[in-house]
Image 1 (cartoon, rainbow, N blue to C red):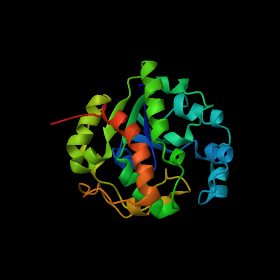
Image 2 (image 1 turned 90 degrees about the vertical axis):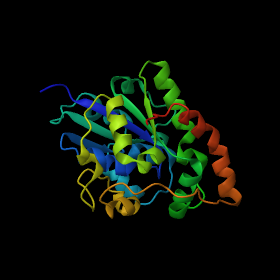
Image 3 (image 1 turned 180 degrees about the vertical axis):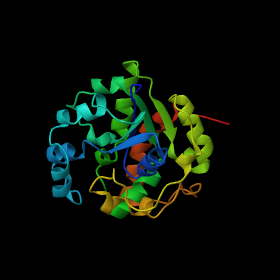
Length: 243
């Protein structure tokens, strides 16, 4: 069997990341890993996320113990898809292991992320949304020659077939229309936190249509979105474009 191609998708929360995991999981030649550093992140930050104790109990507590499954452990599929949250990669964590992977960054406009996240958790700390950390990780990987790909969730929702075709070409795997549809409900690869966060994607059978007008934010939420905008725009300058 040829060596497994390992794709690491780096996203912030509320950013189409679970739908993308569904799309790759539907290919038939891919195994998925869901947020493998979440337990370490919660232990180190002390954040009171929903199902905190269950998340911590479900995964290795030390990020180093996760790495073999992401880099060397044999996978009986041609592709391994790793769904990562950029905020889980704390500043003291070494990222040189990512240089062996195919890295993709999934981005979304801050106003939409802030509006969606605040419905679940109220006003977040900027670090919880990961915009600055995403831009930092992108630069570090780029400087190391890892050549990350960037794709905007709005482009995916606008035309999933065209966007995913372009993405697959960029990361050197074949596109299959199977990526456009999946079975509703929880999936075996989902983290235990899925019952809190995955309600919308569990009710879906494919990508939702193009997003409507940007949400109108006020007060602290509007200020937060404005604070995050420069990091998003810096990433967006590198995004895939396709006709």
